Length: 171
Image (cartoon, rainbow, N blue to C red; front, side, top):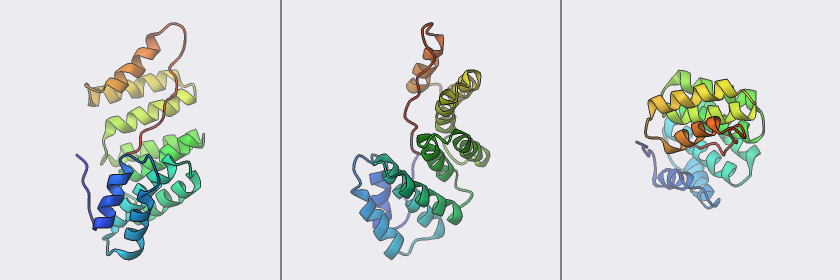
C-alpha cells in the first residue's frame, strides 16, 4: 500500500510520479520542495518522486541529483535506494545499481519483490544468469502472483536465448 504524505503539492507530485509519462508533475514537486512546510521524510519522498519523473523523461543527471538529495535527508528510506539504483541501471552503472538494491533490501522497508525483480534485471545485463534466476525466484517467493516475475523466469527455460533485459520499475 502506497501512502502519500505532506502538502497538496507533495501529494500531487507523488501522484504524478506513479505514472510519469510527462514532466508536468515536476512543477508540483518543485513547489512542494521550495514552498511547503514538509517534514524531513516528506521532503525526501518529494525529492525522490521528482527524481522518478526526471528519469522517466530522460533527465538522468537531474534524477540522480534528486535521489542523492533524498538520501541525504532520509538515509533509511529504502525506496530512495531503489529509485537511485534504477537510475544507475539506466546509466549502465550496474555495480552501483546492485549496491543500492542491496541497501534497500537491507533496510527492508520497501516492497522486497520489486527490489529483487529490479536486481534481477541488472544481473541479467551483467550476464550473471544464476544470480538473476535466484533473485527472480526470491521475488516470486515473496509475491507468488507476480505475472511479470513468472514471465521473466520462463525466459530462462526457453532454449534459444537468455532472458532479455527490461525496464526497471520505479518504486
